[in-house]
Length: 229
Image 1 (tube, rainbow, N blue to C red):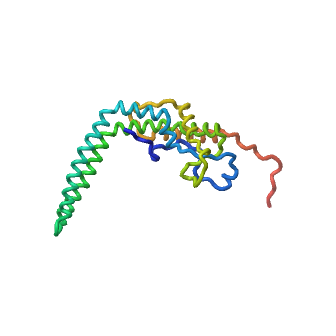
Image 2: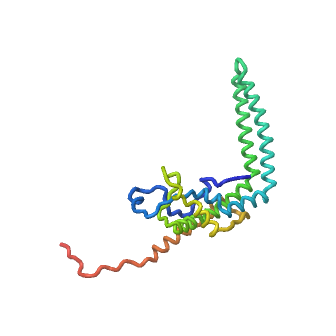
Image 3: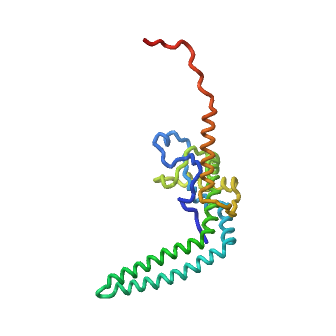
């Protein structure tokens, strides 16, 4: 099983670098780089080791899902063949043709549901691994930017053209390996995908509100108040 982080799964916690930058912001930047955080996460030691551990720990579920998937596909192929036979008939029996099409559709949906249930523990473990990496990704990005003297970082998708030396993805991997050498695949009870990132974001928002609440108030104005008529 080789499953790479999906874009929708990797929610970067409080990412301070925006892929959409105005011309003045780019003009003021002293150093601009690009980095693909999804690639960096997938290349990290933490993710690679966790993937191997998941393959071992959940081998039974993975093997069952693959075996059952092959069986279900064979059953679907039989239904597809029946549909093709109905479609070739002249004249066509529309009721029979629609019934054959529905049988294929229903079987596919049932197969997806069944395979999803078999692989649910595996998917949850992968989501937990991704979540742990996501929480520390922003820290790794900032460290890589400091090391490479970059003050603006772009997503590769937002760049039309660039030289290879502006890509600091490998530097992000290096920092991520240093900051987060490993992660756990033991999913806590009650865990929901994305939970760690949500909790981290909430902590950051709470801290920001607290800092605003304890900020030193502006001094009261002094001098004579203007009179009004």
